[in-house]
Length: 259
Image 1 (spheres, one colour):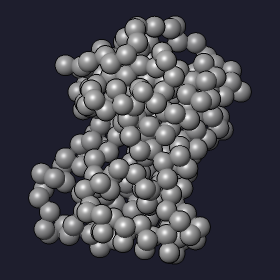
Image 2: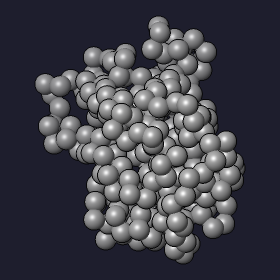
Image 3: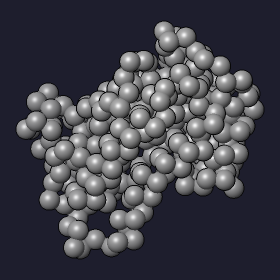
Image 4: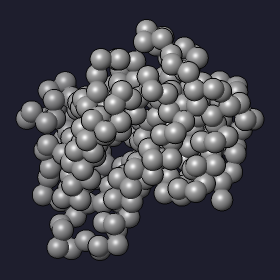
């Protein structure tokens, strides 16, 4: 089942928006928008006068996310894999101008020969199949002048010895982006490829391991620091508002993929 956290139904007729409208009064749905890059994107979209919808699995997370958004923002506690409930949610939401998918669990890392295949499948579920489900169910409500923005990661082009799973997912997301840009035209489909970001995604690492990872990354990155969620959010806003970009991959990794 699904649970509405805030707001009431406000369905709108699907109508083309001005190509130069920016995000003012646009309806932006962020799946995975209650933490990290997703929440930063939701905040940035709200600051640009968008009507923001949060979708995330845990009611408490949705409530915390809504507390950082303007009054009138709405949230739904629902799994991105629950197709039937997502269809009901989109029906309540009404039209959507921009769909952003950032939902993710802590990365499944380790050597392929040592990983539990169930953990590998679970990683693909939320990052890849969740995105497919969100897109399939939202499509009837998505403006033809709108956009979809997906997420991968720098592992797609610079994997480590223990990042085979996440590299595979990121590569799949990038291929999916290009294919959907063709299939769903004129709806624009783009993707943000972040590098290491200081978000809660790395919370499963102990403090020392996380600090060592960030310090090593900062030292090797061309910009000399690890990125943060607000920096990534600017790339998501670019993908929503740049009306001549589709099938594009916007890299925000501090130069990680070059060194």
